[in-house]
Image 1 (tube, one colour):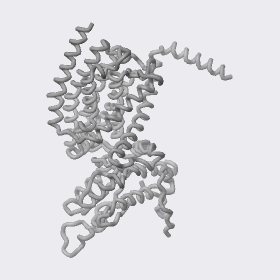
Image 2 (cartoon, one colour):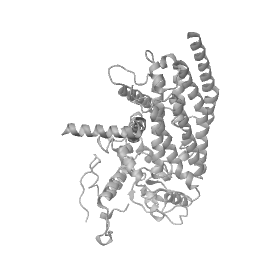
Image 3 (cartoon, rainbow over the protein chains, first blue to last red):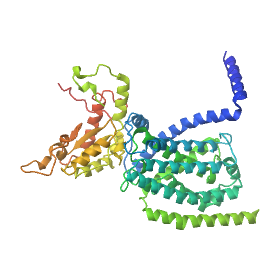
Image 4 (spheres, rainbow over the protein chains, first blue to last red):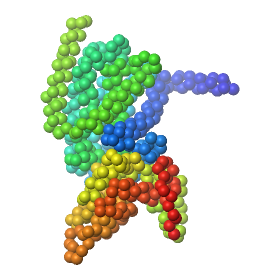
Length: 337
Length: 178
């Protein structure tokens, strides 16, 4: 009986493959898995963030809702679904409604090229790294859109700060990624992992790795670079006017972005899915969550930078160092080869 | 959300979405995000309630949102002067729909020490301008008292705490009030 069902499934699968093609099918199934994964990941990360914050501040964090408070973020999410969606009168409503959707959609695209394991990747295209950074740029655009459409001075100021910060920090981010690309000779994510056969790139490129982590923290608008939503100056930054699940989408996008920058850092500098004993995907996830834990640690330990300090740090120190690093890497690679 | 069990039988609506109402009640009770907003000295105790040793975040109420659009509970922590009252009212109106108010401290309950002859500057209690759900007495109340206020609010949303089964912490059983 069970054999018959299996045969039937195989027939159906073959028919589907013949009809749609294997690539399209993998893409569709991958997208469904990604959508589920993004939610679960965000739920886990928000819970982790509150627990880490609690323990760093000598508190316990969420504890009463479910064992160790694990149901806390689910409860928060359902509550956000049940809240009123306020669209204030003076907003330009189309942009206002589009912005949270647009901040969330490009985040999904990056998952297509993330190498979770030696075979666990939806599509290994040869410009994978560039795809991630290109779609990361849309994020900034939608934040500006939301801030502007809100017609609120705090939201607009937060959005402007976010754009200025992202423009400044994307350059060292890309330059440090470029020095890895110069070493590996490919933009494909799987190719970069394969180039780290013996030694992780963090040992060849410690400066680029550090610059990438700093830039990634700034890219995701997290403390000490969280001036776009500095609570003491701007009420809540660009999402001041957003309520309910629209705000929830911004939240979701922020935590998924954190996962993506950590995953890219893992791929570029920490050997991707490589590691002993355990299968590839486990190592990938372990490395990613260790990096995310580091980012959270930084957030709850350091105070917020002032805006001029932030810009000076990016333009006067990080970009020259990243350029120099890229130049030296290129020279050495030319001499070695 | 109106808790129908608190209403007199003839005031209850004829159709209730029983299960959905219960679920929403539980969910809202366990995720009360307060607004980052303090008027006077009681707010120092409110900050202490969020910090270590008291830790409001245990009950899911530690996410102090700076924007009224994202918060559920307004803790009126302090004296409301007549000049401040319109601002407080605006903040309340900016909050999205299921929203609650905790009046913290004697000034917010009734004007406290400011009730005397020819007093011209202080609003005598939050309930003069806003619908208040929970009163937390004290001058100022200790952080434990504010946490108690939050638990009362949770009970108010979950039929006296009867449906709040996902919370581990159980209150001391109380006598049914006539």
